[in-house]
Amino acid sequence: MKFKIGDATDTALCVALKHEFLRCDDAFKDFATSATIMITEGENRRIAYKTYNAYARFIHHLYEFMMGAVARDRQDTKELTSDWKDRYLASYTQRILTNRREAILNGTAPAWENHISCYPEKIPRAFPADFRRFRNIVSGHVKFERSNLNLSDFYDRYHMYLYMLYRDVRSWWGRLGEEFPDLKGITAFSVVVKSDPPAKP
Image (cartoon, rainbow, N blue to C red; front, top):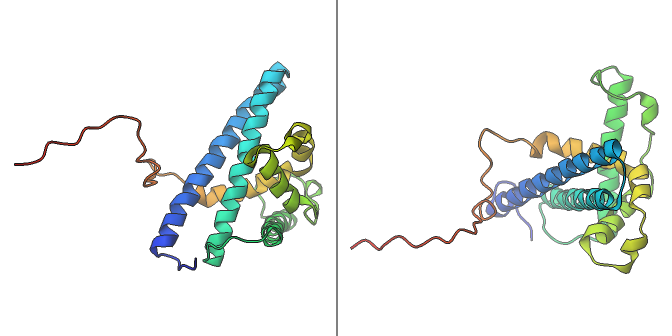
């Protein structure tokens, strides 16, 4: 469905995007907590399970956020082909990588930034398709491939790019004011049974 920036569909999509990014942010923080325990206290199956689940949720929500963002960029909610999704992710991630490299090279990067040698000139060609495939298997769908899928290898090869995407979108969508945002039906959710107020005579 086509829409225009600022109309009712766009407003509703922005609420969904904010919600999805907050879910992504929660998952990343859960992952960081579990990963820290894994590193400092040692590995075991329970902590591996918790860390895996948090990272799987991070992948899932980051991917879904990016797909919602492309719908807003296109001003169209029509489902895209996998090829289109991969090309969008490749272009967006490459732009972030290029901007980061240029900031390092021209001296405008923050003091904490890594050395230029940490960043290749091009993103790995397989990154967008692998991002989509891992999102589908580690979190999106129950598939037999999950038990043999190597999320550790995915993390080793691609975490830098996921983190760059996350940091980029967090700069806008992660902003919170003093009061938690009104996410309409999402933040109106309640498990408390509420009685209707008595009717006025």
